[in-house]
Image (tube, rainbow, N blue to C red; front, side):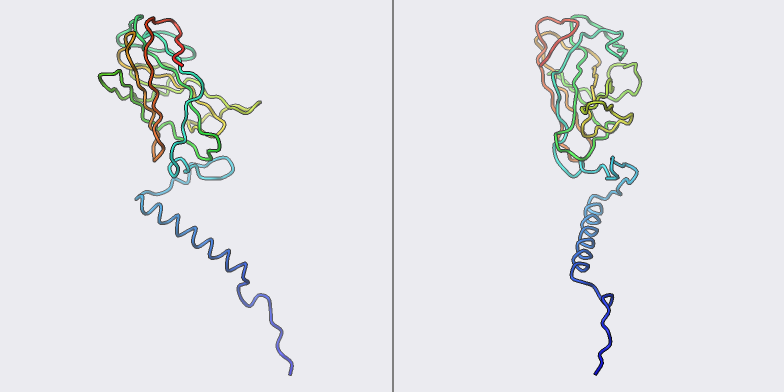
Length: 214
């Protein structure tokens, strides 16, 4: 008896079945995450290589301090590439803090700096600073005063997403400065579940034009 030829296309192979199950499980997991958060993913936020820059919302602490923090007197005028304007200038007080931040090594997401919340605590009260996109910083506010890339021969792109291999220099100033021997604590809180970065420093006894706060 001659049996009809059996085609390889008559059903799933074992490998095809495994791949299909993996795809279905992945899609279901993503749907549960976004439905559980009552939000819709923003597919316009694309990361180099086509990946959606959402991992900063899914993972924990991703932002870190890079290098030392520098302080400056509460003086109006040019400060680096930024022009600072104080409502109550005082050369005897610390009025400007300039940290540089980056992502932890190995991070694959990005932090939207437009959604970053910044607070300034002088030991007795807390003031929330708003971001100023202008090169003129009207205190109390903060701005991105510099963007750098860690890779040789490359520069940071023009957007305000802090991405792997990038460093952002921030300039922050409150309404009034902090006197010598006083304390200041700046908290940078990214949107999502990332752990806030807290920068606490003690004002030195003498206010100099440039102060290395360590």
